[in-house]
Image (cartoon, rainbow, N blue to C red; front, side, top):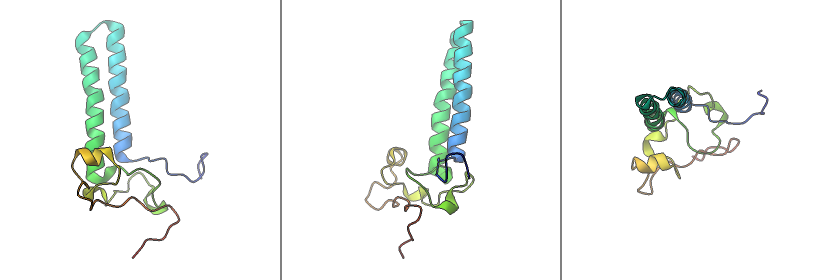
Length: 118
């Protein structure tokens, strides 16, 4: 059990990758500002943009998660989201990719303790 209790903090491959690349891009941008390097600032900002795109692509590939808590068995960060291909309800990233826009998108994950409907 963690210090935060038994909660789903959303640790996913998409989240960790986006965060790592985003922190690196922010660091490059900050160093470039301190050094007065305009090309370095643009390179750092490009890395930040790359982090957004990488997170989005990984989310669409099933390595992210929808909003809300996941069932306990799916909380490990290495578990792939099988519902991602159909799109998540109320997900901006899925809407931008035109997933789940026809009313037949994947339903949101059930609450943690709710049984699956047959």
